[in-house]
Image (cartoon, rainbow, N blue to C red; front, side, top):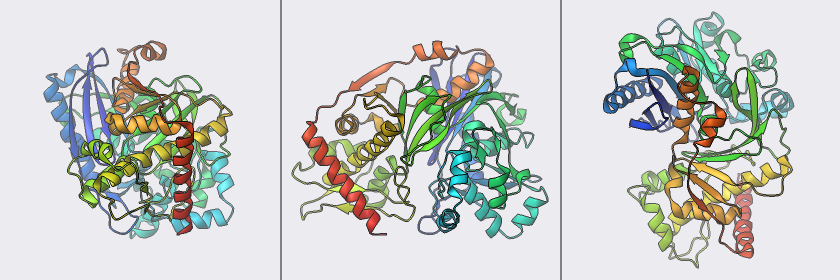
Length: 495
């Protein structure tokens, strides 16, 4: 058994990649699934559709790779974090659509928790801020709003999980109700210092603790797949939330190393080692990974809309047909125009945490068109990243901007990455393997299976494709960023 299957379950699609014994991707399959928007600011997924997409892509990837199921030594799972599923333990059926991490329906309840002075308790135990982004208030909403759910939960009939737990439950035929420390850390229910679910928080949110999965290391035995699903009984040996898996895939194993992933959202993680740094600038303290019972912590900044702003150009405004068109449009934009898009479609994330904000466009002229919108969309990602890195540097007490390792779909755009380096005033390193999320999940499972090397040897295999050096003059950089900050303030003031 010399291959690893990585399941990468994302916000808009599910992918499966087969890696060989040298951690090289052999083949893959991908499938998009439906996004549901029942109300403004609400985002849902059909958990059964997610499961079907995962099953279909795993079969297709294995077939395309030309390997037998018995050749696969283990499965690694990485997933969209915070997305919340509640299902019937007996039937395995969800009792409601999955509520997605982007969903803002619990904003009012979160405000009440803050007004009641509960945020200090949340932050002290979980490292998080009170926000609809996290799973805890989503779970409470389901219990409060699905008929009979609370009584059934208290009777032990219902299970809660993030997407990793849901997939493991389905893959093992209900034999395993588990999660890993990185996903648990994103629920707003898990004490990251003590390594256990917080009874204090669960009681305040009226969540029965019998619903919660068992928490394990990122590389551990999570269960064995049913033979009739994939054609073999394959152990699930690695699990990490998508941003933590990318941190592993980028080999950011040393304190001070920084990565940023550009997918639907953008998520920057700074490894702080065994030090649980408490942010003074509204960043999150979280778990980067947990191996052999040892926790490595991180500071994280979360941007809700990165690649999603390009999807908006395609699906909402319909001014492009494919994401790849944005680079040529951005290059053709009128340099005299100063269009700024603040893509607060589902609120603003770090370091602002303004759940009620909605998107805004500034600087429009009569001649503003698709090219200017495309440039502003790409630039918004760079501006938001600078917001995060400025907060991280202040919390980490390091004035020197670190080199940023980037990954994810948007990093394929040379224009976007050059602007990122320019607005940060720091080098941006793009690796040869852009899809490091799946790579991290594969390494976790393969290392546990004994076919992949240890952390140090894995880190040596990280390969640089290109470094983007800042070229923008400092005065221009400062002026551009000042305009962005003014636009954000105006967007927040409009709430």
